[in-house]
Image (cartoon, rainbow, N blue to C red; front, side):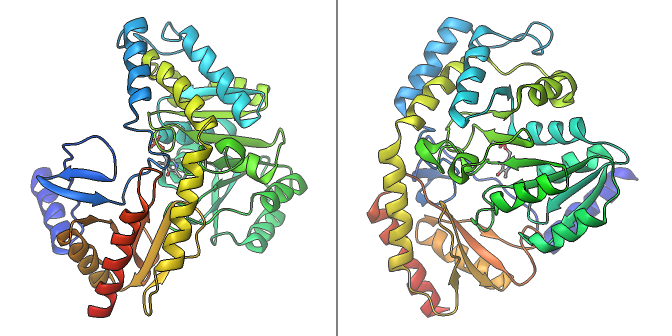
Length: 386
Ligand SMILES: *Cc1c(COP(=O)(O)O)cnc(C)c1O
């Protein structure tokens, strides 16, 4: 019986302590949250600039709803595309320094749509082993050969590219890796793409709004521009709203609009979101103070958190993992923090390699120095007691 076997599979998740549960928040996104009836200080969100609950942004969303209503009514290529979407795409392209941009409903859809539109059977994809799940799924959907190279290992990538006889090649990488917080060697990756005539797709989900001049993202930080670059920015993290965009050479973006199935066969995102996103772009562009504060919090964490056995990874981004190693010890640490009113997620294999279970701290501009101090004190006490 299908249902019995599914029930057994669920029980197996329980047996391995792998069943996920959701926590329900009763307050807007922010460091101080009421979670399952408890007041918590949270270090979990990707709201890096603290914009998700920003009143100016909520006001823009309301104004957008007043102007455009609630729904788009159709897919973009039928009748669900509005002038405010055009304006948003123009502003996004200019902001990241690309010729053209295409706005999609989510980053998952952008990634799983772009890859099959660029490569197919007989082609090859070269992907960093730590890439986001949506990039892995996009690669599988494309039916191209998938080579996963060890994390940031440029010589392994070079060997794989040199050995490939594929007609078309695509290198795919996260800019900021979501479980480690490190930044991909983008200039070196582009040099390899040039040498082996490959596309280079960069998923800047954790860099857009945070890295580069005025938060223009990882490519602008690295000073890179090329028709080979396919940039994906997401708009539900630092931008504080929802959605994603693809940016690059105008012909590439035109092709993606023609072929990306996750763009074509889905209802256009509500135009009111585009109104809110225009405001968000303005807040990001003028967000120097937020980024400066965020950088100061990261610096504070590294200066004050003195660990002996556990290890704060050398990340310069808002993703600040503390590697504990052992699964049970990591879960116990997250539980003890929770009991002390601090919400930090425990990340275990298979999300991270065996033996590298960790607490994944995310800092945002909405945190205060006192918030970080509280976390530091709790972590140092815990390690000593463990
Ligand atoms: C969050 C994330 C995505 C997915 O973006 P959504 O807009 O949340 O669907 C893609 N890539 C990376 C690296 C991410 O962290």
